[in-house]
Image (cartoon, rainbow, N blue to C red; front, top):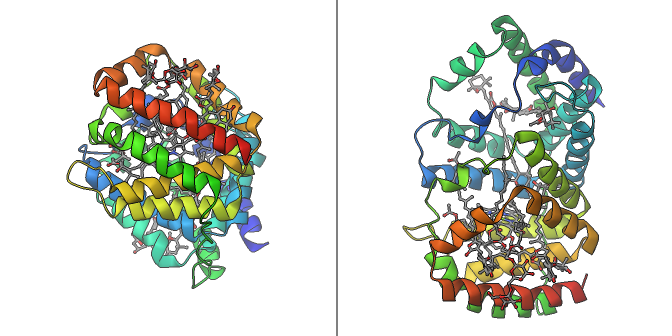
Length: 312
Ligand code: DGD
Ligand code: CLA
Ligand code: PID
Ligand code: PID
Ligand code: PID
Ligand code: PID
Ligand code: PID
C-alpha cells in the first residue's frame, strides 16, 4: 500500500537518526517539562480517545510489529533492525490514517501543552543535528501520504456486554476496593520513578509481554476498555479519583479483556513483571495506604480472578 511504500522512504531518511538515539536513556521516563499530573492525564485521555477510535485490526498489527521489532534489537542504544523500523512506521501510519485528523491533532495539542519548548532542541543536541533534520523532513512527507489515506469518521463504538458473570463480579470487586482506591495518591510523581536496580532492557522484556497480550486481546473488548477509561477520566475529583460507578465499569471492562486471552499469556505478563518489581516497591505502596483497605481490595481481587478464569 501507499503508506508501506512511504514508510520505506521514511526509513531511508530516518534510520541513521534512529541509530543515534539512546533508547535506553532514563530521561524518557521524565515528564517533558514541569510535572503537571492533571494536564498529563488530559493528554493521556486524548491518546485513549484516539486509540478507541482506531481500527482494532490495525492496532493489533501495530502491536505485532512492535513485538517483532523488540526481537531484532541490537547494540548498546537498543535500536531495532532497518526492516522492523520501517514496519513499525508503516503500522503506526496506518493506525493514524484510521482515525479522523482532529483526533490526532488533539493528541498533539495536549502533549504540546505539557512539553517545555526547550525539549525538542535538547533532544536534538543528543544526536547528530543534520540527521535529525533529515528525519523530520521525511516525516513531513510521510504525513502527507497518511493524510491522503485518512478516514473522515471514526470506527464504530464498542459493543459493551451486560449481565455477564464478569460484570456481576466486578461490582463485588469494586465495592471491596473503592476505599483502597480513595487512599492512593494518584497525583504523586512516584509512578514516574525508575524501578529500583532495573535497567531499561530488563524492563522492556516485561513491556514486550504486555504488547503480546495486547495483540491477542479481543478488539471490541479492548475498545470498550479504552472507552470506559475515557469516561472514568471524565468523572475524577480534585484528587484524581473517578466515581464508584465508573471505577466499576473499568474493572468489568478489564476483567472481560483478561478473559479474552489465554491464561498463560496473562501469567507471562505477571511473571515478567514480578522479575522487575521487587518487594521494596510493593511494600512502599502498601505503607502509604490504610492496610485494612488494601487487604480488603486484595481479597476482592483474588475472588474476582476466579470468575475471570472461569470465563477464560
Ligand atoms: C502487587 C502488585 C502491584 C505492583 C504495583 C507496581 C507495578 C509497577 C509496574 C511498573 C510498570 C513499568 C512499565 C509501565 C509502562 C512504562 C511506559 C514507558 O502489589 C506479588 C508479587 C509480584 C508483584 C509484582 C508484579 C505485579 C504485576 C502485576 C501486573 C501488572 C501489569 C501492569 C503493569 C503496568 C502497566 C499497566 C498498563 O504478587 O502485588 C502484591 C503481591 O505481590 C503480594 O503477594 C501476594 C502473593 O503473590 C499471593 O500468593 C498471596 O500470598 C498474597 O494473599 C496475599 O500476596 C493473602 C490471601 O491469600 C488472600 O486471599 C487475601 O486474603 C490477601 O492475603 C489479603 O491481604
Ligand atoms: Mg491501567 C493496570 C493505572 C489507563 C489497562 N493500571 C493498572 C495498574 C495501575 C493503572 C493502577 C498497574 C499498577 C498496579 O498493578 O497497581 N491505567 C492506570 C492509569 C491510567 C490507566 C493511571 C490512566 C488513564 N489502563 C489504562 C488504559 C488501559 C489500561 C487506557 C487499556 C484499556 N491497566 C490496564 C490493564 C491493567 C492495568 C490490563 C492491569 O492488569 C494493571 C492492574 O491493575 O493490575 C492489577 C495495583 C492496582 C491498582 C491500584 C488498581 C486496581 C485495584 C484492584 C482491582 C484491587 C487491588 C488489589 C491489590 C491490593 C493490589 C494488586 C495485587 C496484584 C498481585 C494484582
Ligand atoms: C503544525 C504547524 C503546521 C505544519 C504541520 C504541523 C504539525 C502537526 C503535527 C505533528 C501533528 C502531529 C501529531 C502526532 C500525533 C501522535 C499521536 C500519538 C498517539 C498515541 C496513542 C497511544 C496509545 C494507546 C494505544 C492504543 C490504546 C490506547 C493507548 C486501545 C483501544 C504544528 C507540520 C502540519 C505526532 C494513541 C496505541 C496502545 C493510549 O501542524 O504549519 O508534527 O505531529 O494505550 O487504545 O487499546
Ligand atoms: C499530522 C498533520 C495533520 C495530518 C495528520 C498528521 C500525521 C501524524 C502522524 C503520522 C503521526 C505519525 C507517527 C509515526 C510514528 C512512528 C514512530 C516509530 C517508532 C518506532 C520505534 C521503534 C523501535 C524500537 C523498539 C523499542 C526499543 C527502541 C527501538 C528500547 C528501550 C502531522 C496525518 C493527522 C509514524 C520506537 C520498538 C524495538 C528503536 O498529524 O495535518 O503520519 O505518523 O529499537 O526500545 O530499546
Ligand atoms: C500466585 C500464587 C498462587 C495464587 C495466585 C497467584 C497470582 C497470580 C497472578 C496475580 C497473576 C496476575 C496477573 C496480572 C496480570 C496483568 C496483566 C496486565 C496487562 C497489561 C497490558 C497492557 C497493555 C496494552 C494495552 C493494549 C495494547 C498493548 C499495550 C493494542 C493492540 C502468584 C493468586 C493464583 C495482574 C496488556 C492494554 C493498551 C501494551 O499465582 O498461589 O496476582 O496477578 O499498550 O495493545 O493496542
Ligand atoms: C490470575 C491467576 C490466573 C488466572 C487469571 C488471572 C487474572 C488476572 C487478572 C484479572 C488481572 C486483572 C486486572 C484488573 C485490573 C483492574 C484495574 C483497575 C484500575 C482502575 C483505575 C481507575 C481509575 C482512575 C482513572 C485514572 C486516574 C485514577 C483513577 C489519575 C492520575 C490472577 C484469570 C489469568 C481487573 C486505575 C482511569 C480515571 C483511580 O491471572 O490463574 O482477573 O483482572 O481515578 O489517574 O488521576
Ligand atoms: C502487600 C502484602 C500482601 C497484601 C497486599 C500487599 C499490598 C500491595 C500494594 C498496595 C500494591 C499497591 C499498588 C499501588 C499502585 C498504584 C499505581 C498507580 C499508578 C498511577 C499512575 C499515574 C499517573 C500519571 C499520569 C501520566 C503522567 C505521570 C503520572 C507525565 C509525563 C505489600 C495488600 C496485596 C497503590 C501511573 C497518568 C497522569 C504519574 O502486597 O500480603 O497496597 O498498593 O502523573 O505522565 O507526567
